[in-house]
Length: 219
Image 1 (cartoon, helix red, strand yellow):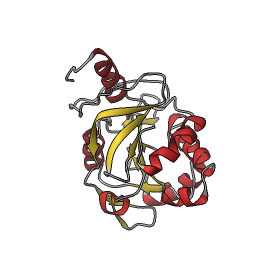
Image 2 (cartoon, one colour):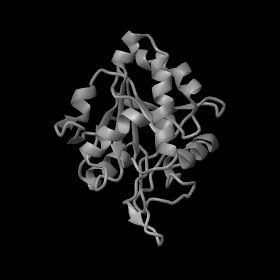
Image 3 (cartoon, helix red, strand yellow):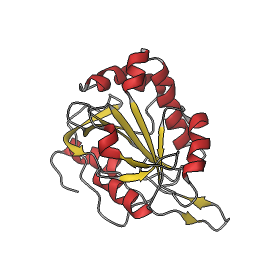
Image 4 (cartoon, one colour):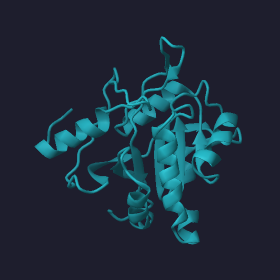
């Protein structure tokens, strides 16, 4: 990782290299991932990036079995993107639930504008049909669920500084998908990812920041 300042480097390591197996375990991606740096104080839930990321050029399959062009279908819309998997016992459903709770506190007009996209890191098990069953209970029926080729998903995640490793079977037979647990917010003004939220972000934190994110402002 490139070191710009001590604070930026620390945040880069915490945000880009910390992976979660959704069970308190940690790991590291084998391939390099994009640099994540910030000048924002640590006391805020959202990390405003010094260098925003371009939205990945990614076409996957949605819960209705139709192609979903991430760039085209979220263009000009405030968008939150999270990479995770449905068999995750803790981090993924909690993150989706917190966003859903915060979204429901918004005026209806703002709820209609906000796009929340869940991209599976375990596409072999998370088919479009499985995502369609899981998302309404874990988050909200309005959330978009995407599945498809793992390599494409991994590349897209790493382009925005989020590490994703292929799912693997543990000795006890369980399958674990190791992935970065960050949520990336994309501006409706620039379509760039400019704010990063960690797994400790609460529903109240999201509720506080969402109105600004929807307007394309810094939280």
